[in-house]
Amino acid sequence: MSLNLRANIVIRATAERLFELICTPERLPEWNVSVNNGRRAAADQAVCLGSRAVFRGKLLGQSLESETEVIDFEPPRLFATRAIRGPRLTTRFELHSQPDGTRVVVDVIGEVPGGVLGSRVAEGFLRKELTASLIRLRAIGESDRTDPISPVP
Image (tube, rainbow, N blue to C red; front, side):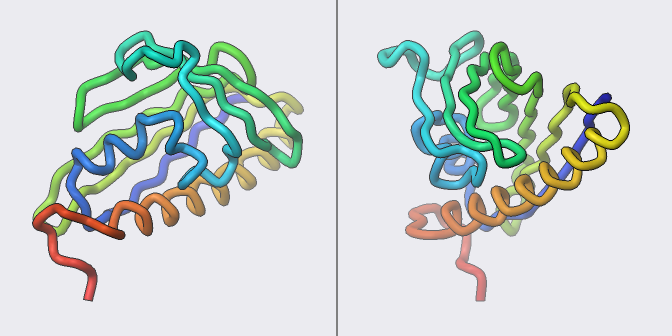
């Protein structure tokens, strides 16, 4: 069954700062609640179009390892990955600069097993995890900033 999630959040930080947090595999466990460990597939390779990363974490309560490939890379505006091992999900981040920070729009699409019931369970769970991850991303993005955007009052 097909899965299609969209979420967005405004973060009082520059697109450049947020792009770095989003696309750096080693930083993913800091803000993505589903990931315990992240690393580049080739340790010395820069993150770029075609680069790969390996992640360990949990999905729907199950431990898993996945590998993704960068399919869109336009700093600091667009970053997207496609899973080549693990859950078959494509995740796309669009960053839109605004006067009060950056709007981060995330789309997660893919296939989940289990028919209609499996899709509903997975969608509800993944939506909660995505929301929690974006809240963490906002907390990290807005902390210890050196950019010119004013802190939240």
